[in-house]
Length: 217
Ligand code: DX5
Ligand code: ZN
Image (cartoon, rainbow, N blue to C red; front, top):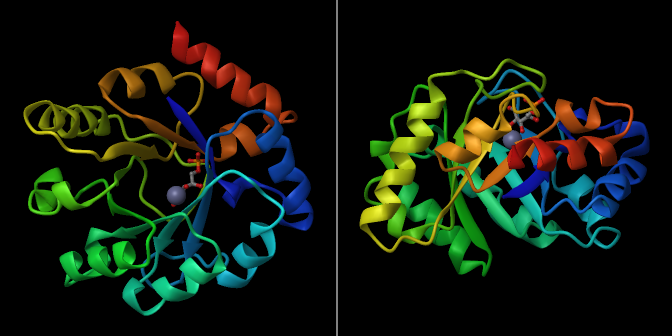
């Protein structure tokens, strides 16, 4: 199980210090939530911040684009330092094309699904992608409650991997804490995004340790 702390819940006034804490704690990826105020009702950061962080952080940048027309900005995010770019299926009319644009840049491609979007929407792209991001809250904000029916969705997606040699990993994002991490990974999640349950605590390093411990029980 990999842990990808989401900087959405970090203190943007001392962002690099917060990131250093989770890097030292052994976080696997840095999850960066990009929001445009159109696709989701919130605005966060753009390529400039990612560029500034890139040469100070060594773990891979997992960039979650919650934006309309993501194809217009992929080059910018790649140049800024994204190692994985995830676009929303709901934001892409020509999803296959967008995936190819990301892959042609030489980085990993992921596709995210909102809670109400069925996994079947990805049937004909699953063999092309490196990651499926299942949203377990409605995207836009940190600190929301995990939607319980998403456990079946994770299991359903995981079972498609058993029949074919897909390479994609399952990332799960929203409302994950030490109280539900085990049920999420048991259902088949490979990568856990956690924002408020890491950066919303006094001690992010301890929070990561506790998530890993809770996953063992
Ligand atoms: C929500 C974002 C998440 C968010 C998760 O739209 O995509 O990555 O930061 O935050 P928590 O873990 O607090 O639900
Ligand atoms: Zn996210």
